[in-house]
Image (cartoon, rainbow over all chains, first blue to last red):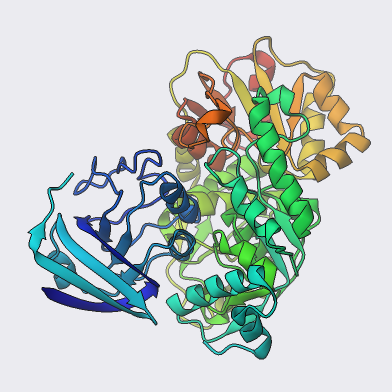
Length: 144
Length: 422
C-alpha cells in the first residue's frame, strides 16, 4: 500500500480504478455525456469510459460550461468517482464536482503523476483541504 | 476563510437549508482558490435550468422548493426553447412545457426570467466596481471589460452567489489580476459586429487565459461591437476580460492597462488575420436552410439595423431567417414597429433561445421521454464567430460565417454572400 499526500479541493471519499490521461481534458467537448466515453483529441485515453474511475490528468482544459457536463455525467451514471490533477482545476470544474459530490485532489507533482498507472485500484479521501490517495498495489483491475 | 457572523449563520443553517447549501458550496470554492474572505455582490446572472439536459430544470425546482430566494438583482441565462413563440422554431411542445417549469421556479425565487445571454440589453447593467457573478462567459467579459464590474467566469455557483449575496474573493475580483498580459495593435479597419466577433476570436485564441489589451481602433467601438468582441474572445479562449484603453473602466491609457508593468511588444492584427476567421467557418454546402442574426442576443440598436436592411424586401423561398433577441428587446422592438418590419420580410423573431441552444443541438442529452429528435439541417449562415463555432460543434452541420449585411443579402437571394472587406 502506497500513500500519496495532495491538496484537497473538494471533500469526499471514493474508491475506483485509475484512468490516467497524460493530456488535459475539457469536460465540455471531450466527453460524451450519455456513455461517459472520451471522444475528444486526448490520445492517451481516447475511447475509454470515465464511469466509476478515479480520473487523473495534469490539468483541466478551461470552459465555463464544464460544471454542467460533470453534473450531466453524474445524472447519467457515467461520471468518474474522483478526480486527481497536477495543478488546480478550473472554477467551473470545481463547481461541477461539488454539485455531483466528486472529490478532487490536486497539487500532485509531475513525477508522481507519471508513476500512476491505469487500472490500479485507489482510494481518494479528501477533508479539510488535505487529500490522501491510497494505492492498492496488489489489485489491478482490467482496463475497460 | 475568514467569515463574517452573517456568513457563519448561513453556513450553520440558521437562515434555512437553501442558504446553508449555497454557503457550504461557496466556502468550498473559496478554499479551493485560497480566497481569504467573501465579498458582497451586487448582481448575479444565473443558470436557467435547461430542458435539453437530464434533470437540469429540476436543479432549479429543487432550490425553489427549499425556499431559495435571490437576495441581489438576478437575471437568467439562455434557455433551450422559446417559451412564448415556440411554434415558429419547430420545437416539440414537450420541451417547451419542461422549459416553462424553469420559468415558474425562477418566478418563485425572484429572479428576472430573462432567458438571455445579453441581460445588459434587458436592463441589467452593473456598474464600475460592482462585484458580481455570471454563468455565461460572454456576460462576464462584457461586464468586466465594458462596464468595469468584477466577475469570474462562473458555473452553477452564480446561483449560490445570488442566494447569499456573497462570492469568494479570488480571480478577477482582485485588482491585482485585472491588468493586461498581451498587447494587440489593430492595423486594419474593423467595422460592425461580425468583424469584431472575428477579431475577438483570433485574440482569444492567442491570449489563452490572459488579459488582452487591444488598441489602435480608428474610432471608439460601439457597444454592439464591444459585445461582439467579448463574445469572440470568450469563445475561442479562456479570457475573462479585455482592456481597450479609454473604454474599459478605469484604464485610461496603455501604462494603466498594464498596471505600471512593462508594456509588451504588440501583436499587430492585419486584415488577413480577420479574414482567416471568416475562412475558418466557410464549410462546403449544397443547400442553405437558415440564416441567423443575433448572437449574442441582439440589442435594440441591432434590431433597428436589421429592420433598415430588411425594410420592404422579402427573403428567398425555402430559406428561414432567424433573428434572436431577449424578450425585453423583442417587446420594445415590437412596440416600435420594428418586429412588424422584420416579420413582413419573412424573418422569425425568436427569444429565450438560439440555433445552438435549441433542439437542433446533437451533443445534449435530454430525458428520452421528451422524444427530441434534432432535425437534419444542411447549412446555417451566421454573422457571429461564437454561433459559428457552436453550430459546427453542437449542431454538427455545415456553417458559413459572414457579415451582417452580407447575411441579409444571403437571405434575400438564397445564395451565400461572403464578407466584403470594409
